[in-house]
Length: 436
Ligand code: ADP
Ligand code: ZN
Image 1 (tube, protein in one colour):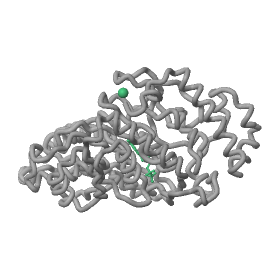
Image 2: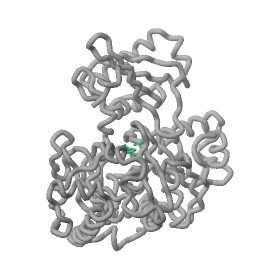
Image 3: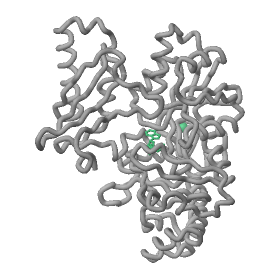
Image 4: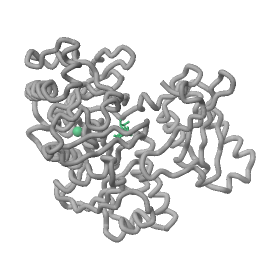
């Protein structure tokens, strides 16, 4: 373990630590961030009167629009001279949100990533190929400094230039790959085309994150590369990657609870839900200085697992993200997540693991088309086989989604490959009515 004292702390000690840090955070934002002073005054919360973690429930939520309204630096809690780094979200869902780090924040961030890399099996003996894009996006820098902290040798490849990635992986003997799951999948495809076999590379561990993926996707990645594929989670607003990560048991992502307090809420009512129940993840940062956030609504859907893990860690785990509430499509009244479609498609023969969902509206009716890529051209010659395959996919989708989807079988290699976060949904309906 990277930090045994923290990672195996008793629940009582952890709660005591969290409360002390929560109080400090409240005092700091009350003093330094006019936005939070007003928010807390409005509901009559006086920071030094907060005496239990249960009081957290009375603090108003912070949402992405609060960051946008205070764009770019309005929620910073320290003067600019203390900020040493600026990042922004990847902008998947609109204008990016900006975050600033003090030196202590950067140290905390590396500590978080060092822990999750170690729990996935990484050590100073490893050679880590970082195939996240370096830039405003937090992914690459987060993993870079965390892995450097544990003493691994970093190859700062960035994303893209996939043939070269394959060459470097082989020549330098990379043992860790850092990327999105969708890019890793594409990389494996390119390597296959180049005739590179599992035995030609030394890869052992995948540290995948920044987007959702299913267990089916994990198996594909593990088989294709011959690795243990672990997943980690984070978002720029909270720090970047390193909020949580899986240990080798792959039973949920351990949250770095000494820095982040997790809650699960019902997205509709805002009520806190008990452990085990699925809802929206809300996080309060309790040691960040640059831009502390109180009860930040992540829009990511998961549940919390409080039991001690087989690895010995006592930190609460969060289950795989089921989807962003943003990603959820409502089609004829039925909620559909791309991950449900993925779980159907990835187990099936004759089709590649690349897919897209296209939603359109005809009159008042929404239609879902699932575009699936064939693995092999030869199938195109047999109409009856194609028809049978299409029927199978349709039936399976119907069971999982509870609605009829059109299935379009596309020729091999026609769906755009992603170098970062994959774009799974094409929404052709007009924007004002498209999602939530
Ligand atoms: P953006 O919101 O623009 O994508 P970020 O780059 O900060 O900005 O990405 C954060 C988001 O990425 C999270 O809110 C979550 O939806 C997604 N994400 C990150 N890690 C994972 C993961 N392991 N599983 C599912 N989604 C993830
Ligand atoms: Zn564990």
